[in-house]
Length: 233
Image 1 (cartoon, rainbow, N blue to C red):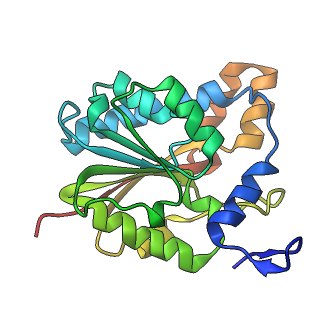
Image 2 (image 1 turned 135 degrees about the vertical axis):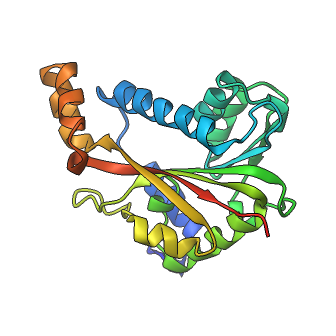
């Protein structure tokens, strides 16, 4: 558990996440369009392979931020009325409300405290969520909570990085073996994607094509997109 030196009392992990987000650097990322383009290609491939029907699937995104991923799902054919987002940061959620159709359900607060029906969702999305949780017990609790929300034959769609960043102690990488440990009953299939961001930014500044050349080397990719399937019992 984190400790708030200003008030002399321990913080919850949710409070600590708010503090970490508040001190993150902001600004444009020259490599971001290439990151998103690549991730979209892989998500579309997952849609074809998973058999999840976009027109009827119910999807929950935990840590929906300003709604960008949910907007993408609508673009891919998912029905807004079947989408739900949970977001800890009120200002980010307010931006999501502005950007998304009114039929998308948006819920403020800590995902662990939000009351949702068990086995209600075909897909639960976790995009760069768990690497922001530094408390191991909180990670495990959230993973159990998420798994309860997934329908049989549904699953968790996970995108996150696998390696620690020595220049950012506010996050911690989660390797594939740790993902499997968090979801021991899931069938985990992963694709390694996303050129290491520091290298990607340097490459794009030289020439965008250099990004693709370097990204062709699997060892230089730092993230995984995983489908963690819940099998029918």
